[in-house]
Length: 382
Image (cartoon, rainbow, N blue to C red; front, top):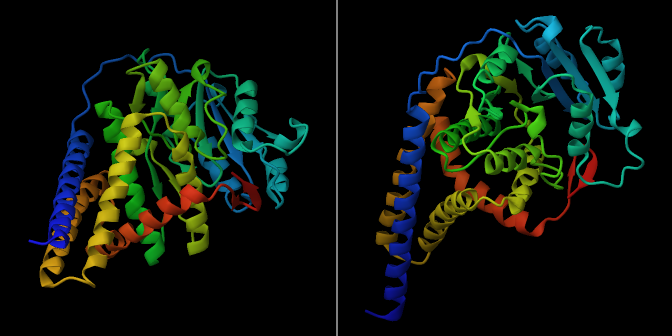
């Protein structure tokens, strides 16, 4: 056996080990996603006052639907308020905001609270301002391009009947179209929701989505990050570190918030690059390890595909084994999560999306290491 054969065998062995760890991780997530919630008989007598905060920039097409869905919630008008912070919009957002007449709605312009625009994390500043205006002990946060169900506020408020709860994150899902890009985003989000829930329920790691999360006003940390994105992730990790066992995933269909996928490939890449760059700031070893394992699994898949060009049929068989094994465990997990959202799976679209995923995740992962600035909503940030 020559050195090249030994090197290839070693690489194959490493590939199998990474596949094994990946399968074990997905089975771990699958178990905790499906693990029943413990019965808790907490009384919900006195409803808390809830301050709903929304940060928006150039959302003229979504503001009205978002605000209407919240204002029409089945929660006493006297016990919630909606605070909207406009982040230097250049479209007709302000005109729409001025015409909204709900008595418990107010909006503020970020530009009136900053001396200049020479900052990086505009959203963090806007959140701080919104919280300073909030009357409630419970802060319920969403985005301007979302809409919620009629019991959204109530479902969050009920979680705080349990005194130890400091932070709640809840499901987000796409109202997506039928394009291959939108289908890809749908399946990716299903995976993310499952991983978020399982990570929190198991205590392995903590994730959140700023489009649907709530927290006690007193635990908000304004120094969570200085990245242009990721306030949700940095906040939940900071709270979890200070208050162990205080984080909850609200696995309730009444709590789902709906948003929209990116329509163009360029917009999709910019969004994912924005999300990827914030991972540099995570201080959770478990979170970093999971990200590294997922990246390595997909990198290994691409590497073995590439080796087919130079090796014989045995490399094809080995690569197919890796691909099929990964497809099976991914489909098992995504199918389980899709059931909660009552989402029918088109298995052809799902398989196509999963086959594209290694190319996407490796491309974004590598690019995020070298990109320090990017453009988002007509603004250059880092």
